Length: 326
Ligand SMILES: Cc1cc2nc3c(=O)[nH]c(=O)nc-3n(C[C@H](O)[C@H](O)[C@H](O)COP(=O)(O)OP(=O)(O)OC[C@H]3O[C@@H](n4cnc5c(N)ncnc54)[C@H](O)[C@@H]3O)c2cc1C
Image (cartoon, rainbow, N blue to C red; front, side):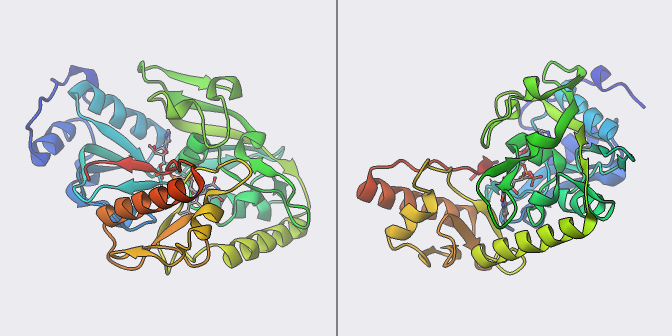
């Protein structure tokens, strides 16, 4: 394979086809697509094309794709399930790397090693069936492992208490990352600085390649009960993703009040701009009624912010990432 560092940098004004041609000297061309619409790769089903989309199928492949883009001076973005982003209608310049690195291994002592493109829901089912506890809280949440560590995935503790928020950091042991300096390193929780909806990955361009979790032996039947209770809890409070695409909660939590409650108290449930609507059942979730654009979403966000500012004096801050050109 050619050395990514030996390729010459690309400069502005290059066409998507030329970007793909340069990337294709190092990456597998059968997995490179030019001008690929991103909407189908997001849970919101919104967004214009990536200049170039590449499917990375192993952790090494993911690292090579990033290293190659860096060497060529091509902007790059790592895409998981696209569950926490709004992609602009005009798309994303440069390279979008879709993380499809899904290899994983569960050991008899409950150690789970997994590449970062593995889907959390698949790992939940596999570990629960094998009788290991730790991931069951995250059933029904669309996420790759990379996305889950990026944001410190969270959900409420099991019924009936539901008295506290549980975080993926609680079962995290370590992960291998490609650092923004270009080296690969295994790091622990001290490096990641897990917080609420925040980790080091929000502040540095490090990328998770693989991760290790420590799960506890438990009773599979009990874990299946928890899965059913969690799914039922979610199903009764959130719009159903398959019918009403969304990006989950749009605004950050406001301690003690809840962004959704404030928006609801402004009478905005059901309010819409174009095909983007504030959900009737959860006011902190915007849904795509079919043909919503990123412009609709931005206008709806601005409307909700203005209403809450005027009525309560709170500044609502978006939780989702805005990717590309709007
Ligand atoms: C219906 C619905 C319900 C949800 N419920 C919850 C919930 O209960 N709790 C909760 O915490 N979240 C929830 N979310 C939000 C979302 O599921 C999480 O933020 C999830 O972790 C996003 O993962 P992803 O793989 O889709 O990441 P993406 O949306 O694809 O990417 C998000 C960010 O992570 C970065 N990223 C992705 N992979 C890597 C990697 N390997 N290394 C470094 N950075 C990376 C991306 O570059 C991007 O900046 C919900 C979303 C939806 C749509």
